[in-house]
Amino acid sequence: MSTNSQDTTSEPAPQRAGATWSAQDSSTLLDGLRNGVPLDDLAETLQRRVSAVQARCKKMLPPELQTTVLRADADVVLRGLLASDPDFDAEANLDHNTARRWNPERDEILTQGWKDRRPLAELVDAVPASEIDIAGRLIRLGLAADSLAVAERLGYEPGGTLDLRCRMMRDRAAASVWVLVVDGLPEGRHVSLHPGRGDAHDHFIAITPASTPADAVVATVAERVLGSPRGPVETLHRHDLPAPSPSGGDGAGEVPRDGT
Image (tube, rainbow, N blue to C red; front, side, top):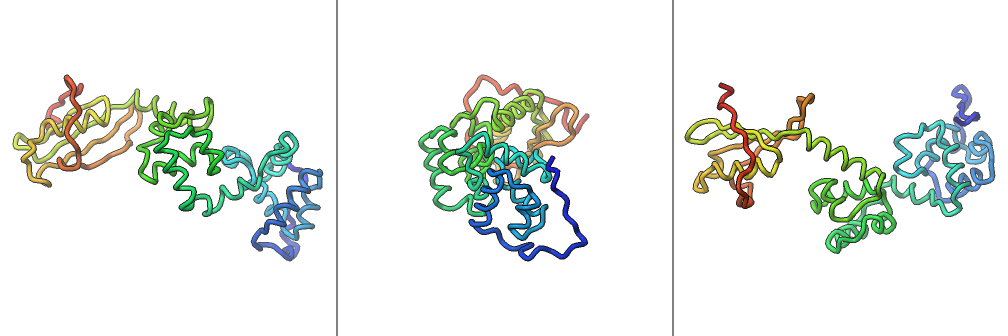
């Protein structure tokens, strides 16, 4: 932890406290960190509180470190990165933390990269952004269903944050069951269990006549994991889904209607 990290709150605020950081401010800060200038001296030069300088240092860290490194330790970690890698681009991480990160040009890079199956490692450099952020943006753009879809199509760094998230998702899927509840059928409520979300969708279509009025039958599909009462839930109508995928069976397990 930095030894020069205490603000004296009883003293008047520095002249530029709360002011927007300029490119020159960032350059001055990075030069000082590279040259071993103490944090208190940097704060005095920049006319800001020590805590503000620490916060700026944290924003210059790679995205995967920003969630784990304490603000009070950020300058020490950043000094180490600058010393170990002369090409470390701290200011690129500043851009990562602004609304300018995603704009039409960068979205187009992601969209085209998705269509071309461009390796995720290349997109990380092209945007630039972390694997997790790119995966999230692809999902928000409607290109990918989830992080697993991103990893399967574009690849990932083994042992990286996206790899870890996908492993957790696979572990959850292996321990989960999907519950299908259908109301509005002539024979009454239907409840069944399925190994996957797609299986539940297919079974819903299979038991619902195609001629059923649009809103007459409503289905609820919910994921449940042992030990957790919560999970994704969606409400569907027959017309929300395409024709079922061909298979010899969907693995549905019927349970008594209405819990009887």
